[in-house]
Length: 168
Image 1 (cartoon, rainbow, N blue to C red):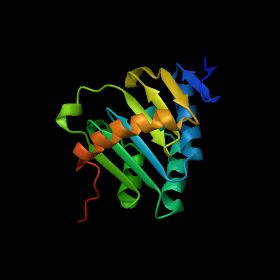
Image 2 (cartoon, helix red, strand yellow; image 1 turned 30 degrees about the horizontal axis):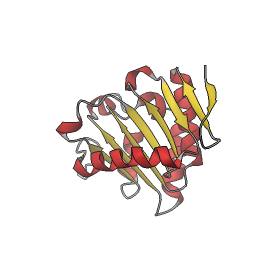
Image 3 (cartoon, one colour; image 1 turned 90 degrees about the vertical axis):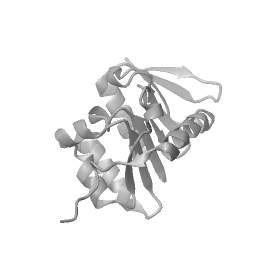
Image 4 (cartoon, rainbow, N blue to C red; image 1 turned 45 degrees about the vertical axis):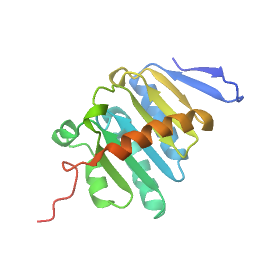
């Protein structure tokens, strides 16, 4: 069950412990996004992103403006490709808005997943497969620290060849 705990900024820390709660919070974060969504995890998470609501929200966000960006860094996309993750064709169509990268080998021992939105909000699972963690809808200080980690991972990552469009 989600509980709300006051933080020092008079905001709320939302704790979650189920797939359904994690997916609902991820959708809420996507819907509030205005400029950028960043995601890191072992794979493009199917619970958070491979559902009709998340797909529609991500599609609308990515098409909203040339300045909106979705950056995803994962350890591997082969499972996503095999399972026909619905975000992959969208990323292939909207290459200027959605980028998918593979993390450098030095980051392959990381098992957490997190999503950052507009330098304000985040969702964090310490162990990606458990869907237990926390989210905050207005936590710029916490997001700033997580954004530094994401930027380091992003800067050392490479574009994913499995999710690129093949022009034949």
